[in-house]
Image (cartoon, rainbow, N blue to C red; front, side, top):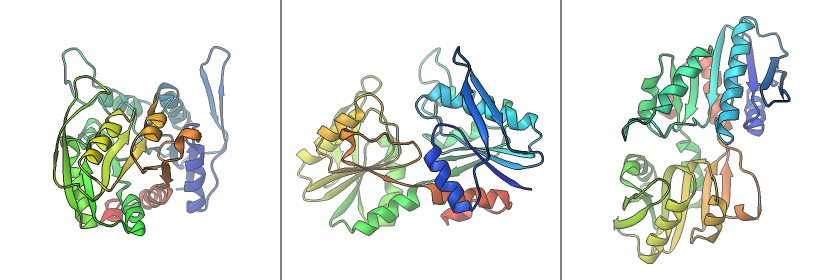
Length: 310
């Protein structure tokens, strides 16, 4: 099957890096808006019988980017594409993955249904907020991890007296995995969240005094929790506080909070494009294009994707 890579508007720079590694060109497409705001799309390349990959993280503006992905998928389906894979480095609406309260939606499942209905036959995503989201799909899901490139970044800097910090109980498994690969100790922050996007730091379990502390999380959204965790660790005598996350959502005043915090550096990937500004001096971006390109190559050749991580 011929390989076709189509990019939405969400992260064109990442798409360009991926096709550069693959040694192919981005397929020609048209994405415009009607005067009332509706999305008008057309795939200009011939995709009949092709193995198509639509690169589109559903980041801000989430609804716009999600609709672009669905519409492009529908266009490919109606153009007789053989296989349509949604490459979603960031899976939006993933945080509502269960009924934690009465009368709330499970949007992670809703989006999964929408993708399949649009004609997508496979999903390639990275660092889901909860691994069980894969079970919401009735189509194959390849779940990638940014961990290899993030681990390499840490090792190259050879931090002294490094400890890995889990910012909450839910992130312990992730942080433990990083700590094991880095041969570092694990610290756990016990916190209570009174309401969404707010957190109260309760206890720090483990030794952080005179240590270089690396906070590990899957995403940074408003950065309110991250700033409070960093401050609590510093108060306990940490020599240096850094943070690392797969997805830099960075909504609202997040960039300013990071700039004003005691964090020395926040390391994120380019799964979501970073809009540069005066408030991003502490933020470093690592590309995951190599992992995504390798996964696309393996899928197109019907090879193992999990072999990338073992």
